[in-house]
Amino acid sequence: MRILLTADPELPVPPQLYGGIERIVDLLVTGLQTRGHKVGLVGHPDSTSSATQLFSWRRKRSQNKFDTLNNSITLWSAVQQFQPDIVHSFSRILYLLPLLRSQLPKVMSYQRYPSYCTTSWGVKLAQGSLSFTGCSDYICSIGQKSGGVWHRIHNCVELEKYTFQPTVAADAPLVFLSRVERIKGAHTAIAIARKTGHRLIIAGNHIQTGEAGRYWQEEIVPHLGKDGIEYIGPVNDAEKNQLLGQAAAMIVPIEWEEPFGIVFAEALACGTPVISCPRGALPEIMRHGVDGYLVNSLDEGVAAIKQLPDIDRSQCRQRAEQCFSADVIVEQYGKLYQTLLYGDQDDENCFSTNTFNLDTTNRFST
Image (tube, rainbow, N blue to C red; front, side, top):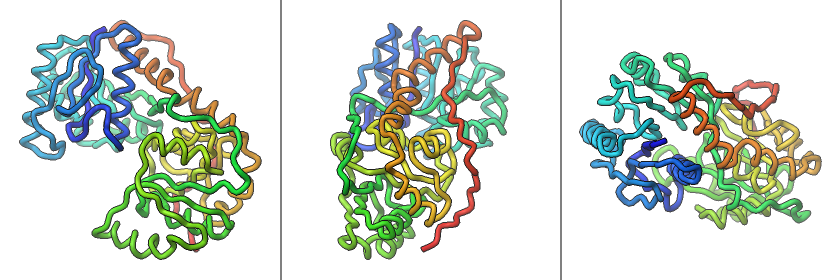
């Protein structure tokens, strides 16, 4: 097959630091080429992906109307040159506008919340030539309200970058690894760590201005350097592997509907249990009581820390291998392409069977 992929114009493929979608696109390029396919990529001009042919976006702002017009022309031109059997977009559905009326099979993937307006008119204009994927059942359930055919294909991790650690030290710290903002629950992670007497290492970006800046200054900074609470800033892949591998658990008690969250799968790849909340895609990523704990309150979070010795770290690693490895996810995308081009294929799914209470009410209190 000849497959043309697109990524958002803001970051290169692969990304130099953060950039989950761009990392997934790069893994897909490599995986598809390994399987003998020709893969073109439309992306940031600094992309170093090994794609068969690279095309650069003319403009770099996804939310700008003028840039959107220019980038839709770029994609149209790339299709004329590359002559793909299928176009798979991880960027903006508006870039597909000149192609929607054509019968060329197209896939639009969402690793973020889909817009009802744009997806619904995309369905109408494409007249059956456009399919959708979501990074979780949760995202698919939102997208299905606008119509069209939706397929759940999870995000993936490079297992070879994450070292399985079957055991950790008795005094191993808890780790919070995410953007340091309210919806990610860093303040709750601090409260749980303090109540249980555990050290907590906080890693990730934070913002200095606005509401997010006030959150950082008022609810995080006063705790740093006290009671074993430490902030180490952003981390690269090697540092992330070491940080997660030495942790008793990764604790990110979210306060929003998480579309997926690759870092949760990365923790499992190290054999590290996850403590989070049953919101968004979390019940799909991890099994309550098997790969960690999904908690609804501060008291439940404290209880989960005490129950960490009950978690078999090898089960966490197996979860990552079976459901979130690059090989598994590339295979699922390959089967989808085959289905769209040549008819139905057997569908293999890796569903979470959690029946944990999905109450999304925030009941954390300190």
